[in-house]
Amino acid sequence: MVGQSDGNNMTLGIGYGMGAGAIWGLVFVAPELVREFTPLQIAIGRYLAYGILSAMMLAPRWRSIASQLVRRDWMTLCWLGLTGNIVYFVLLSSAVHAGGIALTSLVIGFLPVAVTIIGSRDHNAVALTRLTPSLLLCTAGAICIGWQAVAGPANGASPLRVTGLFFAIGALISWTIFAVVNSRCLGRLPHLAAHDWNLLTGLVTGAQALLLIPVTLAIEPVRHSLPEWGRFALVSTGVAIFASILGNALWNRASRLLPMTLVGQMILFETLFALIYGFLWMHRLPTVMEVAAFALVVASVISCVAVHRRHGSNGSGQPALA
Image (cartoon, rainbow, N blue to C red; front, side, top):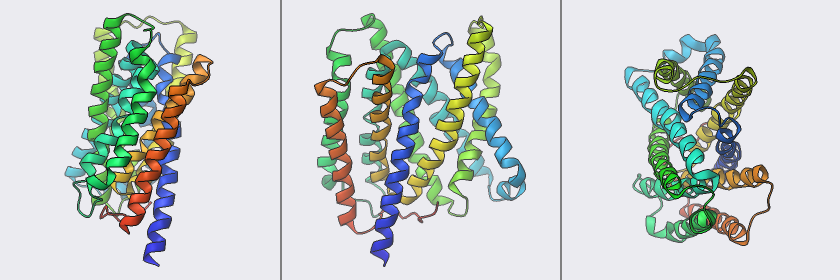
């Protein structure tokens, strides 16, 4: 019965991870929808909306939820808000503006490798040597995804694309930190619902975004028409609802049900869906290399799941709570 329960939890966790990836892929398109605004302005708009929505959803249960947290938890939430939300999204938006969706997706595609390697050091985790085939497939898929962006004709000036590459690497580092810390915090707080942890992260991130408004007013131009502001508000609210509220909630559930070595593989779906949405945005079909990337990514996830099923348990030391 335990083995069957573990198998059900793994299947459910993978489903949550795929759902989060499908929603998060939309984030790569958002900067293209509001190119008139700077990355910092886009981040402030998204996370202000995230914070307001989180506050509204937390308000009826605020006292009972707040009583479950200590000072260390609030400090962690502040850290997660910066690394996984504001800093990451500013860097991601900057990378998309400078290097395009494909180049950014290539770099972010290496997130599963980074998270899985770190997660392999956890207690009772699957040995890294057993995950090598999956990691190699993942790496090959990520390289295929961005091959044309790197080796093909550049859409913009070369120095600008190099700048985009550095922004994307910064986003990769920032979100790797978030994924690891967030997963371990959820394991440390089994009494707190994953959805409530997401809303608390949103509340803190919204407060941080509020503090950044004077910064953007001081260093960035704010000269936009009324229709542009209307589109900005719609995009910010839409991304907050789908990516921050719903996507993060699915991700936190996956993080509770899966070991970090398998959670890392779920990030591949964000890259895949980002490319699909990018194809739709550019009105074109995928190339042979991009189709190969899809096949490699799917093979990577299947290989990783098979290894974890043979491992006989979720290996995370975390309770399977949602």
